[in-house]
Length: 331
Image (cartoon, rainbow, N blue to C red; front, side, top):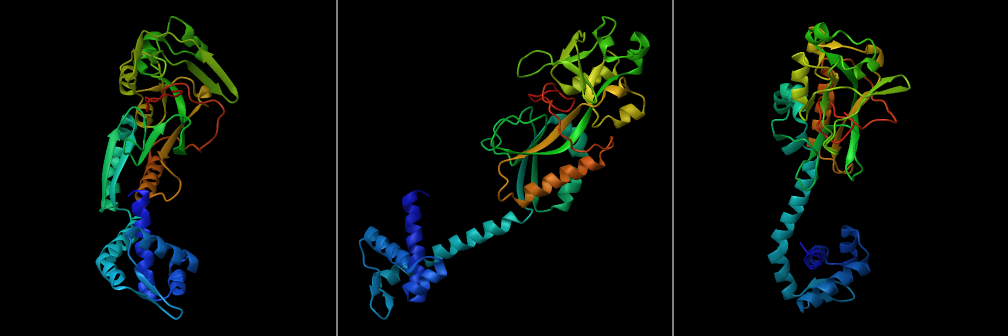
């Protein structure tokens, strides 16, 4: 609806209020306007239609024949507009309708997919569309209601809410350790004796750097590696198969670590954290379906087998690609 049509509808609403109240003053009270504002709105409507719509006397206000005919014709439409507005307001608090979510592929498989049926059974009036994408892109223009991604957010107009900080672990399989030995210190990975599985930074096209954190100390290491991948699942598979050492986050690794399929190499150097964020367009008038899904993700993470971690801040994040993300960022 353009600006002119908006003024026309506004004038018709004022006319209907005057017809019901038979007074500019009472109509103004009902509409939350001044009496002069009501009078001006009627005058503008009459000028636009080039027709006198209201008889004004010192004691009463009444509609002309043309005014009554116009009110009768538009009354149903104005009622429909009111009903639509009320329904829209009501729907904001109802968990219903379609929700379209942009998520990382591996995060969707590990965290979301086992619990989606639970969410949909709890919300029978909702239709959920999960789309696995490598990047957020433009959330609004692409038609998404929200996104769930790892890594520090780039500057944007989106609301970013951090819901988890995950540990960054350096792992290898027992088969790899049998063949190459277990490195005693992160600096040992600079030796030709070890192979590390590298991951490509999509922003630069070059492999991510490796770092190791202990307290306030950050140790960069120029690791060796003959295998470079762009897919997190391929990196994990190659690590499990014994080819090389990988840096991963601890979400979804509980079975591999407890079952012995993977060994954490440097538990004293695992203080680095990698954040998980939910993104949505605005903090004002957040639909109930969006709030409900964010609560669902948060609850799912709290029940995910892993070391419980508080959400903490860190001055240095956002350089490499995580096991569960292929976004521009640190892991």
